[in-house]
Image (cartoon, rainbow, N blue to C red; front, side, top):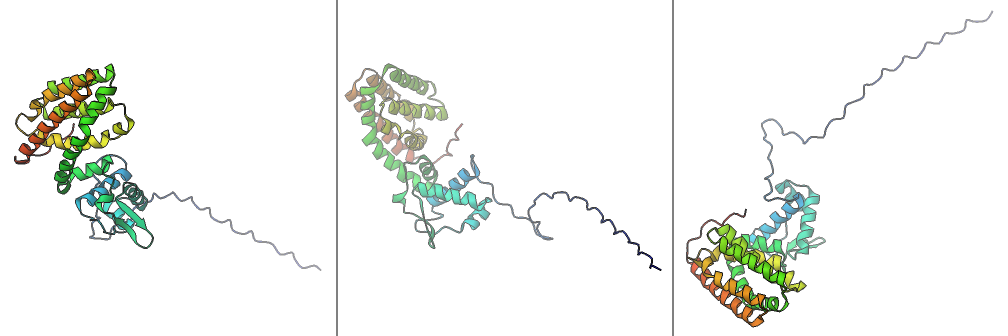
Length: 283
Protein backbone atom coordinates (compact mmCIF):
# COMPACT_ATOMS: atom_id res chain seq x y z
CA UNK A 1 0.00 0.00 0.00
CA UNK A 2 1.55 3.27 -1.06
CA UNK A 3 1.90 6.19 1.33
CA UNK A 4 -0.21 9.27 0.60
CA UNK A 5 1.43 11.85 -1.60
CA UNK A 6 2.37 14.99 0.40
CA UNK A 7 0.58 18.15 -0.65
CA UNK A 8 2.68 21.20 -1.43
CA UNK A 9 1.73 24.39 0.28
CA UNK A 10 1.99 27.29 -2.17
CA UNK A 11 4.62 29.87 -1.22
CA UNK A 12 3.14 33.16 -0.05
CA UNK A 13 3.10 35.83 -2.74
CA UNK A 14 5.47 38.62 -1.72
CA UNK A 15 3.75 41.92 -1.10
CA UNK A 16 4.37 44.45 -3.84
CA UNK A 17 6.49 47.34 -2.77
CA UNK A 18 5.17 50.73 -3.65
CA UNK A 19 7.63 52.70 -5.78
CA UNK A 20 9.26 55.38 -3.70
CA UNK A 21 8.80 58.90 -4.86
CA UNK A 22 12.05 60.64 -5.72
CA UNK A 23 13.03 63.04 -2.98
CA UNK A 24 14.37 66.39 -4.11
CA UNK A 25 17.87 67.09 -2.84
CA UNK A 26 17.79 69.63 -0.09
CA UNK A 27 20.46 71.35 1.89
CA UNK A 28 21.03 70.01 5.37
CA UNK A 29 18.72 71.67 7.79
CA UNK A 30 20.25 73.51 10.70
CA UNK A 31 19.76 72.00 14.14
CA UNK A 32 17.23 73.37 16.60
CA UNK A 33 17.93 76.94 17.62
CA UNK A 34 20.55 77.42 14.90
CA UNK A 35 19.83 79.89 12.10
CA UNK A 36 21.22 79.14 8.68
CA UNK A 37 23.96 81.59 7.74
CA UNK A 38 23.31 82.86 4.22
CA UNK A 39 26.28 83.75 2.01
CA UNK A 40 26.32 87.40 0.94
CA UNK A 41 25.01 88.06 -2.57
CA UNK A 42 27.80 88.81 -5.03
CA UNK A 43 27.65 92.36 -6.42
CA UNK A 44 27.24 93.27 -10.08
CA UNK A 45 25.74 91.44 -13.02
CA UNK A 46 26.97 88.61 -15.21
CA UNK A 47 27.48 84.94 -14.46
CA UNK A 48 28.49 83.58 -11.05
CA UNK A 49 31.99 83.03 -12.40
CA UNK A 50 32.26 86.62 -13.66
CA UNK A 51 30.97 88.03 -10.38
CA UNK A 52 33.30 85.80 -8.36
CA UNK A 53 36.23 86.96 -10.52
CA UNK A 54 35.21 90.58 -9.91
CA UNK A 55 34.93 90.08 -6.16
CA UNK A 56 38.29 88.33 -5.76
CA UNK A 57 39.99 90.78 -8.18
CA UNK A 58 38.55 93.76 -6.31
CA UNK A 59 39.84 92.38 -3.02
CA UNK A 60 43.31 92.10 -4.53
CA UNK A 61 43.41 95.70 -5.80
CA UNK A 62 41.95 97.01 -2.52
CA UNK A 63 44.72 95.31 -0.58
CA UNK A 64 42.52 92.77 1.20
CA UNK A 65 44.85 90.20 -0.38
CA UNK A 66 48.15 92.12 -0.75
CA UNK A 67 50.97 90.99 -3.07
CA UNK A 68 52.72 87.92 -1.71
CA UNK A 69 49.59 86.70 0.09
CA UNK A 70 48.54 83.08 -0.38
CA UNK A 71 44.79 82.97 -0.99
CA UNK A 72 42.54 80.90 1.27
CA UNK A 73 41.55 77.43 0.06
CA UNK A 74 39.04 77.31 -2.79
CA UNK A 75 36.45 75.69 -0.52
CA UNK A 76 36.78 78.53 2.00
CA UNK A 77 36.45 81.25 -0.66
CA UNK A 78 33.48 79.43 -2.17
CA UNK A 79 31.77 79.15 1.21
CA UNK A 80 32.29 82.87 1.82
CA UNK A 81 30.99 83.89 -1.62
CA UNK A 82 28.18 81.35 -1.67
CA UNK A 83 29.44 79.56 -4.80
CA UNK A 84 30.84 76.13 -5.60
CA UNK A 85 34.49 75.18 -5.68
CA UNK A 86 34.47 74.87 -9.49
CA UNK A 87 33.28 78.48 -9.83
CA UNK A 88 36.13 79.67 -7.59
CA UNK A 89 38.62 77.61 -9.58
CA UNK A 90 37.48 79.19 -12.87
CA UNK A 91 37.62 82.68 -11.32
CA UNK A 92 41.20 82.04 -10.17
CA UNK A 93 42.14 80.89 -13.70
CA UNK A 94 40.75 84.16 -15.08
CA UNK A 95 42.83 86.19 -12.59
CA UNK A 96 45.94 84.16 -13.43
CA UNK A 97 45.39 85.14 -17.09
CA UNK A 98 45.22 88.81 -16.01
CA UNK A 99 48.62 88.54 -14.30
CA UNK A 100 47.24 88.99 -10.79
CA UNK A 101 47.74 85.49 -9.41
CA UNK A 102 50.08 82.54 -9.81
CA UNK A 103 49.30 78.97 -8.81
CA UNK A 104 51.84 76.31 -7.87
CA UNK A 105 51.59 72.83 -6.43
CA UNK A 106 51.98 72.73 -2.66
CA UNK A 107 52.43 76.51 -2.62
CA UNK A 108 48.81 77.42 -3.30
CA UNK A 109 47.63 80.53 -5.14
CA UNK A 110 49.70 83.65 -4.53
CA UNK A 111 48.98 87.31 -5.32
CA UNK A 112 51.60 88.71 -7.72
CA UNK A 113 53.23 92.17 -7.41
CA UNK A 114 51.30 95.03 -8.98
CA UNK A 115 53.97 95.43 -11.69
CA UNK A 116 52.91 92.02 -13.06
CA UNK A 117 49.20 92.88 -13.36
CA UNK A 118 47.80 93.53 -16.82
CA UNK A 119 46.67 97.10 -16.17
CA UNK A 120 45.58 97.46 -19.78
CA UNK A 121 42.91 94.83 -19.14
CA UNK A 122 39.67 96.86 -18.86
CA UNK A 123 38.39 94.79 -15.92
CA UNK A 124 41.61 95.15 -13.91
CA UNK A 125 41.57 98.89 -14.60
CA UNK A 126 37.95 99.16 -13.53
CA UNK A 127 38.65 97.42 -10.23
CA UNK A 128 41.72 99.57 -9.65
CA UNK A 129 39.98 102.87 -10.42
CA UNK A 130 37.09 101.92 -8.13
CA UNK A 131 39.57 101.65 -5.24
CA UNK A 132 40.38 104.92 -3.45
CA UNK A 133 43.92 103.72 -2.72
CA UNK A 134 44.70 103.37 -6.46
CA UNK A 135 42.63 106.07 -8.17
CA UNK A 136 44.87 109.12 -7.59
CA UNK A 137 47.99 107.27 -8.76
CA UNK A 138 46.26 105.92 -11.87
CA UNK A 139 44.84 109.32 -12.81
CA UNK A 140 48.31 110.90 -12.51
CA UNK A 141 49.80 108.16 -14.68
CA UNK A 142 47.01 108.48 -17.25
CA UNK A 143 47.67 112.22 -17.49
CA UNK A 144 51.26 111.39 -18.44
CA UNK A 145 50.13 108.72 -20.90
CA UNK A 146 47.67 111.10 -22.55
CA UNK A 147 50.45 113.66 -23.14
CA UNK A 148 52.51 111.00 -24.89
CA UNK A 149 49.74 109.30 -26.86
CA UNK A 150 46.79 111.54 -27.70
CA UNK A 151 48.54 114.30 -29.71
CA UNK A 152 49.94 111.58 -31.98
CA UNK A 153 46.55 109.85 -32.16
CA UNK A 154 45.01 113.15 -33.29
CA UNK A 155 47.77 113.63 -35.91
CA UNK A 156 47.35 110.06 -37.22
CA UNK A 157 43.57 110.51 -37.37
CA UNK A 158 44.07 113.64 -39.47
CA UNK A 159 46.33 111.69 -41.82
CA UNK A 160 44.07 108.63 -42.15
CA UNK A 161 40.48 109.74 -41.53
CA UNK A 162 37.91 109.55 -44.30
CA UNK A 163 34.88 111.77 -44.72
CA UNK A 164 32.68 109.43 -42.67
CA UNK A 165 35.21 109.49 -39.80
CA UNK A 166 35.24 113.28 -39.76
CA UNK A 167 31.42 113.43 -39.76
CA UNK A 168 31.26 111.02 -36.82
CA UNK A 169 33.73 113.19 -34.93
CA UNK A 170 31.60 116.31 -35.54
CA UNK A 171 28.50 114.39 -34.41
CA UNK A 172 30.24 113.56 -31.13
CA UNK A 173 31.24 117.20 -30.71
CA UNK A 174 27.63 118.32 -31.29
CA UNK A 175 26.49 115.91 -28.56
CA UNK A 176 29.05 117.46 -26.21
CA UNK A 177 27.78 120.95 -27.03
CA UNK A 178 24.12 119.95 -26.63
CA UNK A 179 24.58 118.09 -23.30
CA UNK A 180 27.07 120.43 -21.64
CA UNK A 181 24.71 121.12 -18.69
CA UNK A 182 24.11 117.43 -17.88
CA UNK A 183 27.21 115.88 -16.20
CA UNK A 184 26.38 112.26 -17.05
CA UNK A 185 25.54 112.97 -20.70
CA UNK A 186 28.49 115.34 -21.02
CA UNK A 187 30.94 112.68 -19.85
CA UNK A 188 29.41 110.08 -22.19
CA UNK A 189 29.65 112.50 -25.15
CA UNK A 190 33.26 113.43 -24.33
CA UNK A 191 34.25 109.77 -24.15
CA UNK A 192 32.51 109.13 -27.48
CA UNK A 193 34.55 111.95 -29.06
CA UNK A 194 37.83 110.33 -27.96
CA UNK A 195 36.66 106.84 -29.01
CA UNK A 196 35.90 108.13 -32.51
CA UNK A 197 39.24 109.91 -32.67
CA UNK A 198 41.02 106.60 -31.95
CA UNK A 199 38.85 104.83 -34.53
CA UNK A 200 39.71 107.46 -37.15
CA UNK A 201 43.40 106.47 -36.99
CA UNK A 202 42.54 103.16 -38.74
CA UNK A 203 45.38 101.61 -36.72
CA UNK A 204 44.35 98.30 -35.17
CA UNK A 205 46.83 98.43 -32.29
CA UNK A 206 45.78 101.94 -31.29
CA UNK A 207 42.10 100.97 -31.59
CA UNK A 208 42.71 98.00 -29.27
CA UNK A 209 43.61 100.45 -26.48
CA UNK A 210 40.21 102.17 -26.55
CA UNK A 211 38.41 99.99 -23.98
CA UNK A 212 41.15 100.43 -21.39
CA UNK A 213 41.54 104.11 -22.18
CA UNK A 214 37.82 104.75 -21.72
CA UNK A 215 37.87 103.33 -18.16
CA UNK A 216 40.53 105.87 -17.18
CA UNK A 217 39.05 108.75 -19.18
CA UNK A 218 35.77 108.34 -17.33
CA UNK A 219 37.55 108.76 -14.00
CA UNK A 220 39.40 111.84 -15.22
CA UNK A 221 36.27 113.45 -16.68
CA UNK A 222 34.24 112.75 -13.53
CA UNK A 223 36.88 114.69 -11.62
CA UNK A 224 37.71 117.50 -14.08
CA UNK A 225 34.05 118.33 -14.79
CA UNK A 226 33.77 119.50 -11.16
CA UNK A 227 36.08 122.42 -11.94
CA UNK A 228 33.97 125.53 -12.52
CA UNK A 229 33.20 125.78 -16.24
CA UNK A 230 35.70 122.98 -16.94
CA UNK A 231 33.63 121.12 -19.50
CA UNK A 232 32.40 124.19 -21.38
CA UNK A 233 35.86 125.73 -21.34
CA UNK A 234 37.27 122.74 -23.29
CA UNK A 235 34.59 122.63 -26.00
CA UNK A 236 36.50 124.96 -28.32
CA UNK A 237 39.59 122.75 -28.32
CA UNK A 238 37.50 119.69 -29.17
CA UNK A 239 36.05 121.54 -32.16
CA UNK A 240 39.53 122.63 -33.26
CA UNK A 241 40.72 119.00 -33.15
CA UNK A 242 37.70 117.87 -35.21
CA UNK A 243 38.24 120.62 -37.79
CA UNK A 244 41.95 119.80 -38.15
CA UNK A 245 41.16 116.09 -38.62
CA UNK A 246 38.49 116.98 -41.20
CA UNK A 247 40.90 118.98 -43.36
CA UNK A 248 43.77 116.46 -42.95
CA UNK A 249 45.96 118.86 -40.94
CA UNK A 250 48.09 116.51 -38.80
CA UNK A 251 50.16 119.25 -37.15
CA UNK A 252 47.08 121.34 -36.43
CA UNK A 253 45.34 118.34 -34.82
CA UNK A 254 48.45 117.56 -32.74
CA UNK A 255 48.73 121.13 -31.44
CA UNK A 256 44.99 121.41 -30.73
CA UNK A 257 45.12 118.20 -28.68
CA UNK A 258 48.08 119.51 -26.67
CA UNK A 259 46.08 122.64 -25.83
CA UNK A 260 43.08 120.49 -24.86
CA UNK A 261 45.19 118.30 -22.57
CA UNK A 262 46.80 121.36 -20.96
CA UNK A 263 43.38 122.74 -20.03
CA UNK A 264 42.23 119.36 -18.80
CA UNK A 265 45.25 119.09 -16.49
CA UNK A 266 44.55 122.57 -15.08
CA UNK A 267 40.95 121.53 -14.41
CA UNK A 268 42.16 118.40 -12.59
CA UNK A 269 44.37 120.46 -10.29
CA UNK A 270 41.46 122.82 -9.58
CA UNK A 271 38.99 119.97 -8.99
CA UNK A 272 41.29 118.13 -6.57
CA UNK A 273 41.10 121.10 -4.22
CA UNK A 274 37.30 120.74 -3.95
CA UNK A 275 35.54 118.42 -1.47
CA UNK A 276 34.73 115.09 -3.09
CA UNK A 277 31.03 114.63 -3.99
CA UNK A 278 29.44 111.21 -4.57
CA UNK A 279 30.51 109.76 -7.92
CA UNK A 280 27.79 109.97 -10.57
CA UNK A 281 25.99 106.70 -11.32
CA UNK A 282 26.16 105.43 -14.86
CA UNK A 283 22.80 105.25 -16.65
